[in-house]
Image (cartoon, rainbow, N blue to C red; front, side):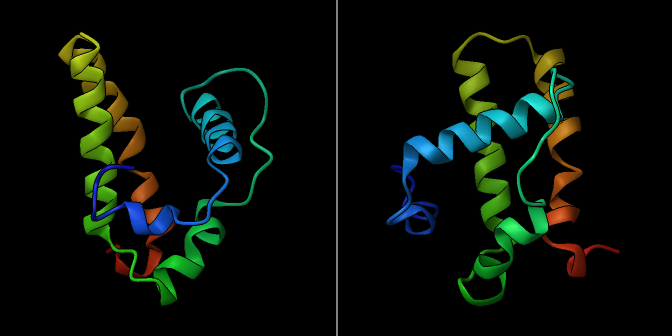
Length: 100
């Protein structure tokens, strides 16, 4: 929330609810138990992409924060690389029209 590039996208968002949604999605994305029952990544971000200025630059920022956090927590680089390999394909789900 302290990143001035990303913070505007979370103005007025119930962060407790948002964290629960993110935890559920990440659990699913990383092969945890249970099914993800939320909106598709495309639908969840569509309004922000089409009218709010959300771009792949912001995706890169979020991914960068994820990597930095994992590094700060002492996660080994090979595991971080695995996380990035799982997260990166979601870019095309959020920004399908920019993918080749």
